[in-house]
Amino acid sequence: MSDTVLFDYWRSSASYRVRIALNILAIPYRAVPVDLLAGEHKQAEHLARNPQGLVPALAIDGQMLTQSLAIIEYLSETRSNAGLVPSDPLARQRVRALSYAIAVDIHPVCNLGVVFHVMRQSQDPDAARSAWMRKFIGEGLEAFERMLDSPHTGEFCNGDRPTMADLCLVPQIYNARRWNVDLSACKRLTAIAERCEAIPAFAAAHPDRNAPASN
Image (spheres, rainbow, N blue to C red):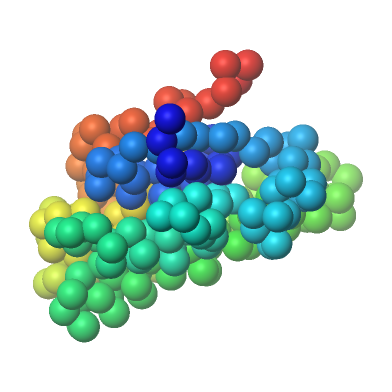
């Protein structure tokens, strides 16, 4: 049994990012599902891992780590030739800016707690949720597309190898497709996402490959 344990939820974007990172770096791990719909993330057992009551939490190197981007940076810094966060300061700043554009600006307003609150305010909760998702994911990805209009963009978000920015992009594209977001104006980022999705480490992290049997 691996001493690396990922406490995650199959559809969680943040968990998806970390699964990709672990796969890219060939770090064996055991996944322990935390059912967000059943409220398991707010139970004492999970709050002991992460006081915020969020996923993922990663037990690795004798520590319990939280916050997906901080976990990815830790893995990049502690594993040789990881390359998920560039060593060059300007490239590192760009990768962080792209990553934050998704993980800090799009993801939080589309998170479960926020969306459930929006649904409770509406007489048509499902319609309100869909409209909310399409608005904020769509607007955020259109801005991300403009950020990619740079000579530093290559086959991937920054250069010609995947970085933390790509690990953030792919789960957000999954969510965009799930909510039928119009991505017709985002040709560059969709092409990058398709290249990523063809890589085994990304494919193995996909929610469909990590869903509980009942789903």
